[in-house]
Image (tube, rainbow, N blue to C red):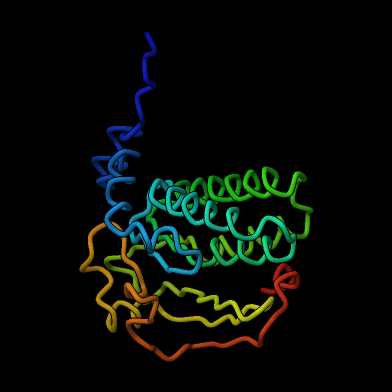
Length: 218
C-alpha cells in the first residue's frame, strides 16, 4: 500500500493568523489551470499571481509551458534557450513575504534548469543561469498587491526573433486598466486569441537585446 505524502498547505499558525497564508494544493492548482488549458500551455501567454505564496501556481504554469518548449524546440539549442526564457519571462508573481518570493524564484529556477538538462543533455552554463535568475528576479516581486501597488514595477518581455524588448510598467497602471485583481488567484494578461487586452504606456523602455546578453543588464 502506497501512502501519499500529505501536501503542506499551512506553514504555521502564526503565518495564517498574521498574513492569512494558506497555500493552494497541487490538485486544485491543476484543476484551475485546466480551465485555461490552451493559454497555460502557450509559451508566451502572460500570467500574474498577485498572492503567489511560494509559487504553487507559478511552477505549475511553468511546467506546462516548458513541455511545449521541449516538444517544439529541443533539436536546436538557441531556439530551445530563447523559448525557455520566453516561458520564464511570461510568468509574474507578487507576495507579501520575502521568504515566499525567494522560494518561488528558487523553485522556478530549478525546474527550468532540470528541463534544460533533460532536453539538451547538459547543465545550463553559468551565464545562462544568470540570465534566468535575472528574469525571475524582475518578475517575482515582494509587495502588497492590495495596498502597495504604487510601489510595484513589472517588466514586460517581448520576444522578437532572438532578441527581447524590455519595458517597465507600474502595477497600479496595469491594475487600473486591466482590473487584474478582479480575477481570483491568477489572471492572464492576454485574451484567448493571444492579443493584449490593454495597451498601457511604459514608464521605461530598453533597446532590443540579444537573449544571451540579458544577464549583463540591470
